[in-house]
Amino acid sequence: MFYLTELGNRLKEAREAKGLSLEDLQELTKIQKRYLIGIEEGNYSMMPGKFYVRAFIKQYCEAVGLDSEEIFEQYKSEIPSVYSEELPEQLSRVQSRKTIPAGDSKVVEMLPKILAAVLVIGAAVLIWVLVLNYMSNPDNDDKKDAKQSDVVDYNKSEDFNKEEKNADQKQNEEKSDSSDKKTEDDTAVKEEKEEQNLAVTSSNGKNSTYELKNTDTFKLKVTSKGSPWVGIKNGEGKLLFQGTIEKDKSQEIDFTNEKEAVINIGRAYETEIYVNDEKLEYSISPTEVNTQLVTIQFTKAE
Figure 1 (cartoon, rainbow, N blue to C red):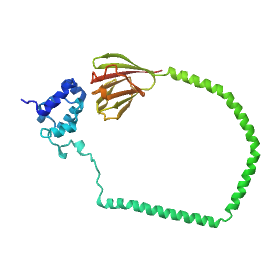
Figure 2 (figure 1 turned 90 degrees about the vertical axis):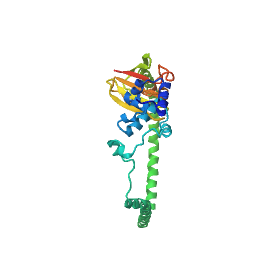
Figure 3 (figure 1 turned 30 degrees about the horizontal axis):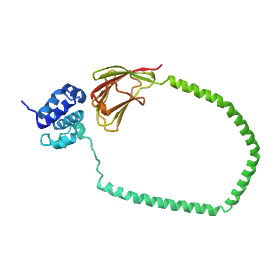
Figure 4 (figure 1 turned 45 degrees about the vertical axis):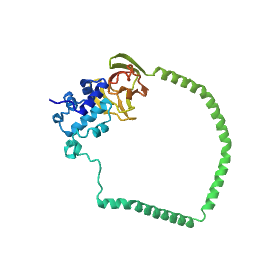
């Protein structure tokens, strides 16, 4: 028989303070209930490996509002250490840093000097070419003056025509003002008619349902003000996103071709939901009910 360790007691108290059962925590973290019980009892031998022990504890902490790094430091004597050879195969293949061979590093160090030398040589060649070109064409200034005089004479002959064109253009602009104003008014009326409608249709416990109408697009954005755990599915139950969203970060998904979006939120008071840039107002107070399941049913405009 296993008894609650100091870490287990700390985690369980935080969970109960949030009003979460083990079933609620299992739904939030997607960690099997038996592993959650093992964490609270300190029964790490039942886990798949030491890496998973630390990963499960980290997810547990985030779900109940504890700082995982602080917990790892405070209870490091209870939590198994993880070495690189114990990581799952798919994680051990990821290299967080690429080392540069010694020979290549010398080339990298010399690269700025090489580029500077190339720029200096290029500038010198350009100046030399310009000087040669100028010396070989001394009559350029005379030709330039002759061309400018031709332009002046041409411009004088065009002045009268320009005045007539400006007068005609002014009359046309005055005539088009009224039609443009009418077009703008029609556009404003059309846009007003096409404004989307997002309204709550039902709310019970931690579940709330909204209906999105009068629009042909459905772009969902979930923004974090802390570090909430969020899961997002479509109407067929397909998981499109699951995990913790870091502070001031967002998760965006286009549901235009879907009929429904289901958002499972661990800390509603740290989470904002936007539908086509319109902020969704919670029908259930997020400070009173932390864990919420929000469903948005989409009826595309014809």
